[in-house]
Length: 173
Image 1: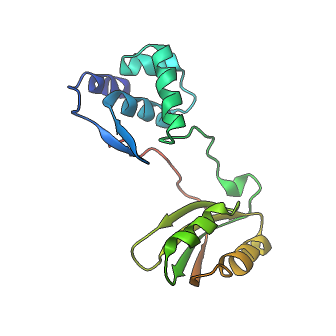
Image 2: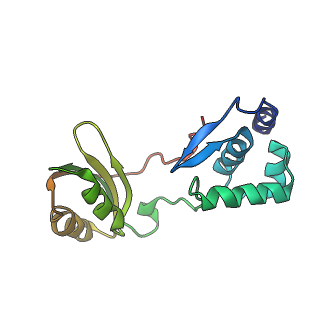
């Protein structure tokens, strides 16, 4: 059923379903969006099956996927629950900053333990998701590295007790 939905979208008139890819890349057409949706459902789906769903040859799908990867529009990765693969502590850390957010966000992005950084409007200037081996490791990252960054005014940590849902199936609107 989903394949039919995606395939029918590729028959829409040009420009009827496009979205800006971000990072200065041109808009994505319905076929590229369909490829992304297929891979979000199953990142190991064969290119031939994707091609059938979106109306392209296997070679054309392979070329499009490589272009989407090269442009940074998407990544194909194995998603795990860090708590089940040896990382015993995971937390979201809210950071408040005095002055420019960019240098702090850049410094957080460079830290290996930080998996996710977003600048926000609201109670915190930045949210950073951290994955650590244990409580001592988390304490070290927050206390000695994040709080030591120039411009960091305060932090608030939200330690994860259990990961209940983690999905990347939001589609391509």
